[in-house]
Each structure stands twice: as C-alpha cells, then as structure tokens.
Image 1 (spheres, helix red, strand yellow):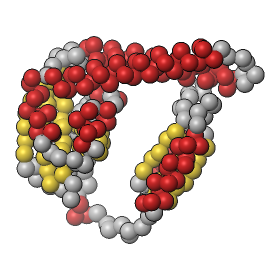
Image 2: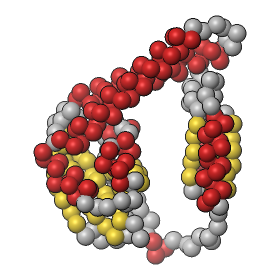
Image 3: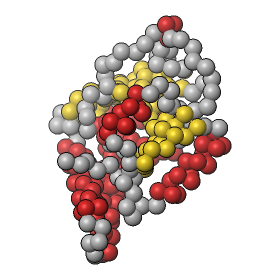
Amino acid sequence: MKRLLTLILDGEFEQGFDATLEIRQGDIHSPSQTRIRGRLSGNRELLNCYRHWQQRYLSLEMLFRALSANPEQVTNSSQRGEAFAACRRAAEVLEGSLNHWLNTDPEFRGIRDKLLRSGKKFQLLLQTNNPWLRRFPWHRWDLLAEAQAEVALSALEYDCPNPLNRQPTPKGKVRILAILGQGANLNQQADQQALEELAGQAGAQITWRQEPQASELNQQLWEQGWDILFFAGLAIKRQ
C-alpha cells in the first residue's frame, strides 16, 4: 500500500505560508504516523512568474483564435515560433523559481528532507486554500519528479465520506474520459496513440470526445464511473 503524504500550506504570498507535513500508511482516513511543521517565506516574485507565463500562454490562445477565425490567413511562421518560444521560456522560469523556493527555504528544510526520505511512488496531497498555489506545476518540482510521486490537490476544508458507509463498487476496467480540444498545428494523433497504448497495457477503457460543447462535457463529467480525465489540445473560450 502506498504511503499518503499530506502537505498543508496556509497563508499568502506576501506574508508566507505555514506548512505542515502529515504521513499516513494508507488513505486519508488512516491516522497520521508523522507530523512535521515548517514554513515557506513570502515570494511575490514567484507569483509574478506564474502570471507572466499565463500571459504568454494566453497570447498563444489569441494566435490560434485568429487562425481559427480566418483559416486562409497567412501567418508569419517566425511569429508562431516566437510565441511558442516565449511561452516555453516563461514556463522554464516559473519551474526554476518554484524549485528554488521549495529547495532553498531554510524553514522548509525539515519537511523537504522528510519528503526526500520517503522513497519513491508515494502519493502527495497538497491542501491549500490559495488558488494560485493550486495552479502551480507541482509535478515539476524535481523532488517529486525524481520520486515519481502522484500529486493531488484539495482545499483545506472538505467533507470526506465515511468509508464505513460507502457501498462497494464492482471491480472492472478503469474508465478514461479523453477530451480533445482545438488542435490546430498540434500533433494530437501522437497523444491519442500514446494514451491508447497505455490504456491497452492497463486494460483500461477510453471514451473519446472531440471539441465537446460545454453542455455535453458537463453531462459527461457528471456520469458515474470516470476514473481518469485526459485532455489534449487548446481550451479556448468562445464569447
């Protein structure tokens, strides 16, 4: 059984975050075996890095929106390349800033060292009410990437069902809802092939949806039994 590590971060980027790491052998209902407290210092610059990357990504969205509105438009290839390169550079800066924050803060060292000693392929549940923290690429934290850890997100307050009251579910195939967004100039076929191969190895069942409408997607998401949600392409808002 995989160990569940819960990292609780409570605070703001201006003042910093109180940090608590809890370690359980089992799921969230199991009692915590270890609890360590620490702190992450305020880091407004990291938030600015995320916003800068977000702006670069949105500029790509605007570029693809223009192409979709006028497919015959001749777009300078260098312009597309520059937009992709700028977005990639912003992502690298964000990733580097996040790793520096998590790896160098002395008040966070006890938690970081405990994570390093937790082995591989553990589950990490990040609990925070800060909406920006939940958007960060935690899977790119080198500590978690090297440990091949699974990362999940949660608010600080939640209702957790009592496991004693849960009805047993029949064992069967893992069900994957795969959504393909707008794919102009994107190689979605490679994504589909990779997912099909992984699903075939695991005996999973895939349901594909190509650029679904909001109402259709909402209905699909409310359907019972989805284990994994997969998305590829661009999610573009339509006014």
